[in-house]
Image (tube, rainbow, N blue to C red; front, side):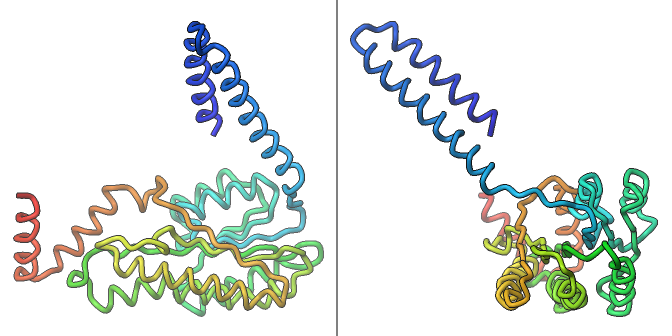
Length: 286
């Protein structure tokens, strides 16, 4: 934003400097430049005032935040940032010995608890919730549950099986609801105002991209679930926040990772299906 503003100011400064040298348009250039300066100044003044009036700092003391899937990606970085800001963090990791889990232990304070949990297994989720419950006592109470779960299944309709679709839905949809159901009682008991679920979805829950059928379908379902849950929990004073990131630079969104996923699906296809898609591809290239 600052780079954009600096670029605009520079371009207009150069433009009007040239126009000032031309007598017939000098007065017009003066009024135009003054208008531009007033518009920019008004914009930033308004943004600054809104920031002062609307921004509320959340006091981290005594607030416990649960984050799932902290082995890598958003969950890993979020756990580290929340610890930096002073929150007590319970970081759920699929593998407690993964590189991401070890990194959290190395760089974070004692306020971060790394817990090995597999949310696809109900028994593991029960243990995870019990651990968080034992932590929520006295001045420490649950304030937020950040549900960050996603697997990517790529390929066109004939490329993936029912089992591929089931697994995508199991993790991306059913596990999201399962985590929310597990922590709802504890979050409801919390005395904090503004307690919340934060569900990390995807911008692909709003657009349809060829070759990503199961993934987009699951993200549309999560978007629907989030909106329903938001209305259901209004009566308890619990917020439900949706985050819909794009393809940010993460290990799972690297071009090589996505290409390998496509290749894995392609290799499972019978030769007859491969021939059909290969012929169509060749025609498109002509």
